Image (tube, rainbow over all chains, first blue to last red; front, side, top):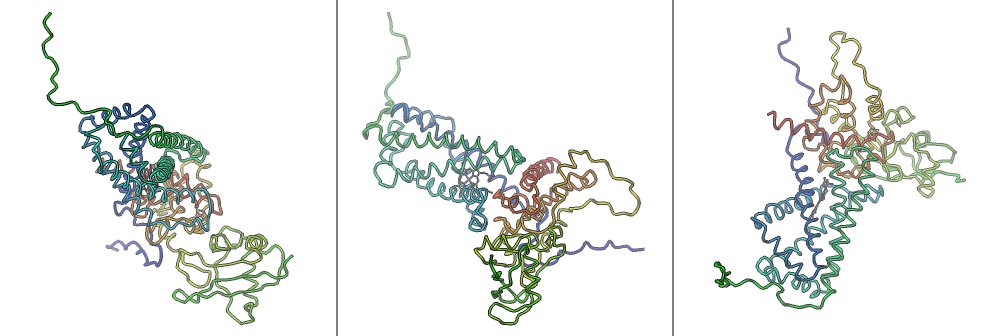
Length: 254
Length: 252
Ligand code: HEM
Ligand code: SF4
Ligand code: FES
């Protein structure tokens, strides 16, 4: 009687592309996390950011109030790091890792989906470069807006007008980022099996296109409004309340 | 009407041999395909310059796009040699046809490549119905017509590897499994008998190089000679693998 089970046939050593490492490794988790972070929190933040900045059309005071409101959220610095900077850094760095591992071939197969594949990588890299510049100059350099929200309008206007390249860079980055996010939502739905069928994917493509276009137009309107609709003024439209201003606690005597 | 067919072929005399390009000038006949063109060269293996050479090595069998063995780069694009028509390819190539082996598989010789990785991948995901035949199991369970209709197109895969060749994610850095294997995993997951291995297939496809490496460039559906609904399979399997991972996480 045979007592030892025969070993399963060994995988032969192959040259070139290696077979699937069935069930091994954690790349599924990291890749799905990358996909999810693109939607929440980063995508959700992108919408919030463009909608908030659209307040510039209502003038410096309205914009200042929006900035003040956001900075008044509970645990705002924790929210900022936990829901924006860290997920964004992860998505961006893992995104670069994904991008360099692909072998794009639109020169041979110039099909729409293949171009979109390439565009997702190019717009991601543009967004990454821009976001570094944007966060550095608007958040970490110059006057601190969490402390002086009244200067928000002036600061953004100054940044846009003081370098010849600023407006072109902002416009290109706005288009690239909205493109990346819009197609990203479409990719997310396709990869997570929300839109498996061709018809569902085509219809959802329209939804993403329209959503992305609306976001992009709002963003572009904000850029040109803040830059050109008013002459530059360095005045703080919402000066800080002084500590020694005390509200009366006792009703005045009749 | 051209009098000759100009062919440029990338050759290699063995797995480790060096590449060389040879040109051929074949008398024109209408209605040829690339396999008959290669047959024509084999009848008289002399280059355009008049130098005697060896016949071109290539894989082919059925000559009717059903065995899947004759995939190669024709005018730079991955296609089946037996269903690629010379007249069309001449027109596309401006009077010249260029042949080369698939670029992502190790060359055996000339246009013949080793596509064993697909076979290994199909084994990794157990793309079969497990009936080991020690006794008669009787008739298999009935399949609803809706299931049959969804499965039939996936059963048309001829393992040609074109979907893998054209995929930007299928390369020796990601070692992505490729669309064909994912399609076959869905085919057998939907089989009433084959579905006993469904969880194993899904776990296999969550490994490194699994379904997550897909970047949805969708070249596979564009290029597949048999028109398999590959993006739909990838989307469905992507969801199923995720659900399986969540289940395993809470069950473990
Ligand atoms: C403005 C911030 C960003 C947002 C809102 C965003 C959003 C998204 C979304 C929703 C996806 C789809 C997820 C998926 O593929 O399943 C995605 C994919 C991707 N993102 Fe981003 N992203 C942003 C920034 C970046 C940056 C800075 C990079 C860095 C290069 C990047 C690289 C990528 C890449 C390579 C993919 C494609 C992954 C694939 O096709 O497999 N993204 N992004
Ligand atoms: S899915 Fe299509 S392209 Fe891929 S191996 Fe099968 S028949 Fe060929
Ligand atoms: S020879 Fe069989 S598919 Fe071309």
